[in-house]
Image (cartoon, rainbow, N blue to C red; front, side):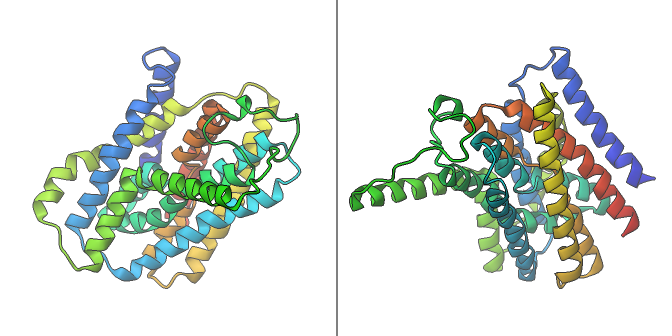
Length: 332
């Protein structure tokens, strides 16, 4: 019974966030307040609480490498398969098909089903995933499509229907070197501005050094960790928007189709290839069915100025994810 009540309660929180925004209790940009709280308070509390309250085996770093591959390969695939589509559509597909919404969505879901043991696996999965979605995804998309990352695509002159923005590389070797340094600096800065990723690095360093965190850290971070599920689901509901026309519906449908193909493939690989017990592989399978990422919504807003469509994509894939993870929990 709990397997049905848990996803239903999450759906109610998502619906509440959407209805509060539609009725004017929340404004369109208020989700950024909860988003900041989630990324800087509740997810860090979940990470620290898990490392302080349970032991972590270095063998779980295999899950980190697995999630990194599952995140980065679809990004390259989407760049290749969309080569004939307009640059706006290419950017949207690349930013919203790539990556897994582990910390904001599937970590609370798996925690509700399996308890604290699932958090350990989810965090090791999210480390590799975060390395891609918090920085590399945006840098790769804007770089390969020649989009200026400092301003929206609508403000950059280009002919309608072009697949890549016009770009003339600098001929001077010194200028090329400076350009590469600027790109690397922007990528590293974006990566280390992610508070959860920074804490992941610290926790892994402590784990490799066999340093145990004091128990009082687990007690202090417990309230914030408990709030992560509610805040994350509420934020998903506040991000939800309806598409404006059939073109946007087709765009979202294409993202959902590609995501399902990626997720099912990764889930099957997790079950048949990972060298862990059945429960761990089952948890990783559920993590592979995560919805599109909040980072994808943020970068879509920054690059395309269309956070609403990305938010709708996130909301729809979140509902699909709840159904898929529940089915895996009950049937596998």
